Length: 249
Ligand code: PGA
Image (cartoon, rainbow, N blue to C red; front, side, top):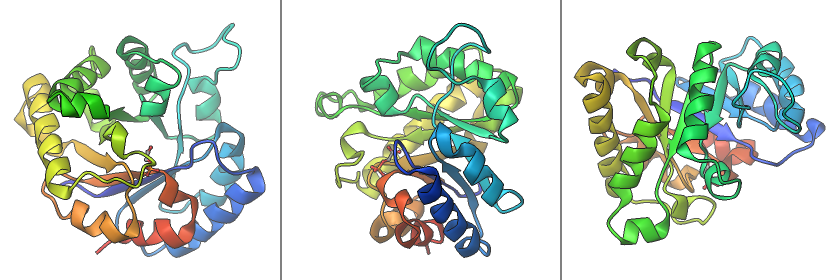
C-alpha cells in the first residue's frame, strides 16, 4: 500500500517572516494529519522554516539543487549546504526549471544522482506542454523525462524517488487535468517504471499529481488508483487552502 504524500512548493514567494507564519500554521493544523507532508520554501527561508517544523510530521524540502557538490558555481546552492540546513528532499526538474531556465534531462539526471548519493529523497517532476498533449505526445514526453531523469539510478535507491506528474498546461493556470486523464498518465508512468525496475518497484513508487490542485478537486484526484499525492503550488501558499488538500477526504 502506498502512502499519500502531499507537498507544497512555495516557489519564489514569501519573506522569512511570511514563511515562518505559514510554517507555524501548518505545523499546528497538520499535527493530526494522516499522510506524508512536505513544504519546499525558497532557499532563503529554509533555515527559518526548518526550525519551526523540526520534530513535526512535515518534511523540509528544497526546490532545486546544483548539479555539482561544491566549487565555482556562482548563484547555485549545493547538496552539502542543503544537508547542513536539515533539508531531506529536493524537487528536481520542475517545469519552471525546464522551460524558463532551460534545464535538460541530462542536467536533471546529474542532479538526481547527486542528491540520491547524498541521501536525499528526490521528487522528479515530469509533464508535457499543451502543444505536446495536443499532438498526442503526452506519454512519450513523460516516458523520456522519466527514463532520462532516472538513468543510472539503482533499484536500491528508487525507494527515495517520487515522481510528480505535472502537465505544464495545468500549472498555475486554474486548469486541472481531469482525474481520469491524470490517472491514465500516472498508470502509464508506472508502466515505464515497471519496464525499468520491475513490477514490484512500479507498485511501490509514489506518483504525485501537480497542476492547479485545490481543496475542491483534491479528493477526486486522490481517489484515483494511480494518484498517490499532490505537488501543490498556488494553493500551498495559504494554510486555508493547503490544509484541506493535505487532509482531503
Ligand atoms: P500550481 O503549481 O498548483 O500553482 O498549479 C503546481 C506546481 O508547479 O508544482
